[in-house]
Length: 296
Image 1 (cartoon, helix red, strand yellow):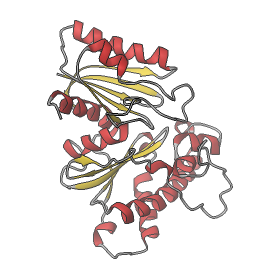
Image 2: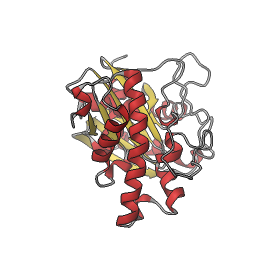
Image 3: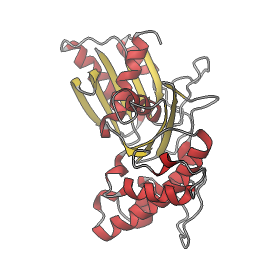
């Protein structure tokens, strides 16, 4: 039995089980500050173990940026994040101390990407990109079953995107202003339209879909030309906006401009919604725990 924590910017999702179809316990925790949020998650796992569901490892799939280099003094921590109060937070230590099991740590997007390859929309390809669209925008690239990372994990949400003609919105990213995340994330839409996406009326929702699709189409072009994936999988809360994936496909096709004339890029199966939906993150955290338990 494994434990998984999807540590998102607005909520922590805690699960215990063996996979997305075999969950024995779960809990959602609204994110406030680290001193309040992390102990509640530790307590959930402790209660679940005490109730007769022992765990052999924990996987943490965290929002970032995070430090993933195991030999680094800050390994297991969130580094410099736009989320107030969370920069420098040790994510691994409290769980390792409180649960006394191996703890695996990665970004939420990398973990979700791995889960989509095991159980979801990328099971039949060897290389793909998973992009999550929500409170932030992040991405993970997988090649032959391994996520791409180097000095740091990829920050696909902070790539530059050309402005839509006539768009005067300054962008919501505190670091880069009008990067992809600054123009097309959930907070960017809330700042642009004055309210959260789930409260949009039909006209505002349609305009928001066009905005997000246009900026994503440009970003996907750059990712495809740089990484040459066989598929792009879109997850996160914003994918629930009606018609978004279809419009992203159209915007991507416009931006690629039939170069290098690959028929796969025009196929509806190239840009697809996440097969696991909102379960991609928690499932990915369980997969991280499975790898930790196996010593990988």
